[in-house]
Image (cartoon, rainbow, N blue to C red):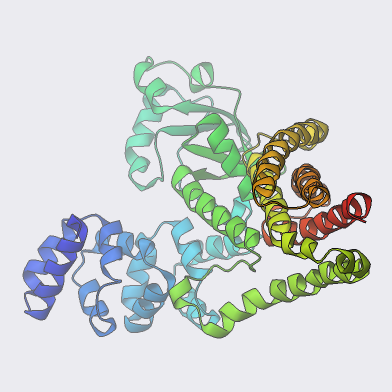
Length: 448
């Protein structure tokens, strides 16, 4: 048992013993993220009671870390006044994330208890497309006019900085709110009081637009080591910023989605244990049907070569090793290529380099596998012509599988599909059919 689990057990004992005053003290001394995690351990009928032990500031911060089910339970259980208090203290991006997950009738109640200015902003954010920069940005940033002096900027920062998402990166605007530069807190502190911001700001600003895809934005954070990134409209007017904590959530979401697609699942935002059996089956059945139907291709190929099998029954015993090896080889290549494209290491212009490299890898790996298999079959006293057929088939199948495994994800990207759909089961199905064709044609040459 780790330290956190031990603390949670102590808190649960305090609840059971009715020592709520002590629990209140301990809760409010802990981190809001840890407190939110504790709510997963509390019986549902006690969650509201524990939530009301939190101080005003801790309540809003803890609420932002809760899962959507717990947030919904809390909002359904508290008064309108308490709803207003939470929404007032909740940062705008956290409020938008919360409202995008709850039922429409609850959204109406929450918005009704939000002040008019914040309500307009929330509605604006909710209208941005999912997975866009606008949907994950916040408007709580520090901005200066380019003609402001350092001393005035510092005074402004002290007055407004407490409510901002970050103060380490400050954004410089002209009179039309066009983004013209960025300045760090370090530069502000180390510069003279009478120096103008425009003379010490960084002019080369990396920015994104409101409709840019969040996966591309995550790659920018990784490439440049950013802690925040400005978001502008089509006229380059600053409308918000995206911070690194939001990007961590995006990376987790995108990775989960890719894993699900690579495993032939329809992506879902819901947690596994909180997803119903019907929903889980629905998310899986479509791809299972597609793969089952595509699997009939292999059956048709085998039926088409019944004559070859009839002349040498022993050939059928090598189907599993041939198909498994080809499928595994193709999956290896597709996984590496999908990962390379996801992190920006591989572009569409690299297609011929990638194919040539995978062909050489396939030749080397296939030759080793073929040689090992040849020796194995010699020891098993397999007829030489069958041995040659199987070993050569392995070599050719691995080369072809590697080529298909790298080519299909890049083709999907070119056609504007997610490359992840070309991984795992789908690659295996295609390679199985190809391996069988190779195997039977070599068998006709060496066995018949």
